[in-house]
Amino acid sequence: MPILIKLFLSFALIGVGAYGGGLVIIPLIQHELVNSQGWLTFNEMTQLISVAQMTPGPIAINAATFAGVRIAGLPGALVATTAVVLPSILMLSLLAPLMERISTNTHVRQLRVGVQIGVVSLIIFATWSYGSGIVGGWLDFAVSALAFTGLVLTEGRVHPVLFILACGFLGLWLF
Picture (cartoon, rainbow, N blue to C red):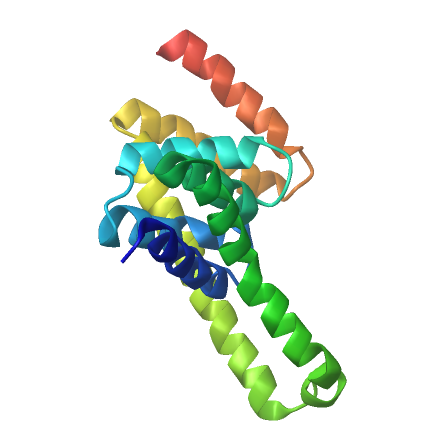
């Protein structure tokens, strides 16, 4: 099968599973691009995710564009980016006219709760797999645990960027 078709199918599948936001895409990319296709190593994936998170725009689109370029050049970027947004566009086009009628349906609400639980599991897995690739020693773990504890204890009263900057300065001092 030609690479562009494989790339399209992989990113369409990622797009279908990306319900729930940007962090959900991390384990989907890991499964498709690292584990299933072998197009990226885990380290390349973490670099790709880091760049996709830092650049403006949705992480799914940024990651698809960057991965597409890495795997198949400019045509790969166009195919991967199109494929990752296509499932959402199709689902919204088909469901938008029905949303008012089905949103109050008990089965639809139960389905949404179940899907949201699945999304949370993907976010936890993304944190675990992505974090375990970065946090190598006890000192790394201690700094990340301290930052996490600070975020939980302040409950959003302190801007998260301050925690990132504090960890950066700790990194300069400790590492």
